[in-house]
Image (tube, rainbow over all chains, first blue to last red; front, side, top):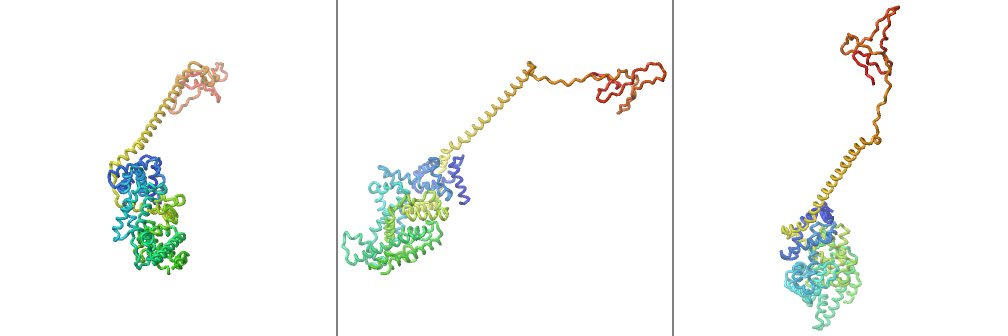
Length: 300
Length: 246
């Protein structure tokens, strides 16, 4: 722990022990951070002022219960910023009570606006997909509002509300991508068999596939199954960091820049390049020997 | 059929840009992500087996303050729970935004918060002051009480000494000695006391006149004898002094 974080820990401990002037010292350290966080998450000054007071009260509540887990492994500003986010997310969750949904939705949009844009931009990247991104955003919002915010009220307290919402948004986006990505039946791409397989699942109700398309569809489905099995088994042999890299990479439509991966994984950029090399080498090796791949190869 | 298509797909998704992306890769990546999640469970992770990082853990992780073992633990949790990974990515972006748009809190809000906390911090010193005062006053009262008790005792003691001799130990008298034997009658000092030399007290012994032998003259009283050791000297023998009796 650095000397500065030792000081941060001493400040927090003094607050928890209710020493004189300790709370005032803490306010002096984190007031700007809390205010900035409230402005970002509420969108306007009036709401931010109310949020600020609520956050401060939450920090004091129950003998500074929320501050007690602080262990000095982060700066006090970082910890309190994330606490502010937690408090305002809980406040948002309470707004989605029956009959109060509209007020909750306005706050929801302000809270999650940047996150929704970020998730969509990751999966639908590229300048040529700007319209697709706008359409996807609108469709996601409609899906969340549907049935009196049924999807948001499905939260049962497992994990964070923020994580739950973002995962729900990502799943809705994947459904949109499955429905809207144009089929590439004639394209000479390495993905052709797989893409045909995906397209076939959508067209089965309206158009009977021809024999070639069926063949390609079956081939594509087996390819996808093989790929999934290889990834699943490979993940069991990879380190924690390599597994995380795999999940991060599957969160986007194209390779994520190494510096973004490095930031999210809290590793140097050089380590991320090595991670990529190890993961692809491992997958290549498994492709040669995995039974599902052999089965797929034998079927064509 | 070679593994070419899958190999190429993996290179594009995980190889970090070494192979040019293809149209449709984003759909394949999404498809694979969903299938992996379906194999794992409900996609939110098993809270009991792989709980999401706590806020303190997430803050330590994103601030780079965790050791190797703790970081591996967080990596495992984020890899196994998509919701946790989304939350971490959101938190990371949020912290970056806070850092980039930092602004000062309104002075009135801060003042109001300090004022709300003031009674708790202000009453403590006042209570402490009143405790000190109480302690000082009680000490003073005790001191006065002790002084009063001592004074009372002394007064009582003095009263008891005057009225009840039995009660009072008599002051022991100095041991009395029998009067010293008279060694010589006191004699009138000589009319002309012997001359004394300054600083010296020379006194010639009183010499009796010698009576020639054969004389029938009554020999007057003998010359005063020098006192024996231990006996009180007859100070009368010293010219100019008077005999005093003890």
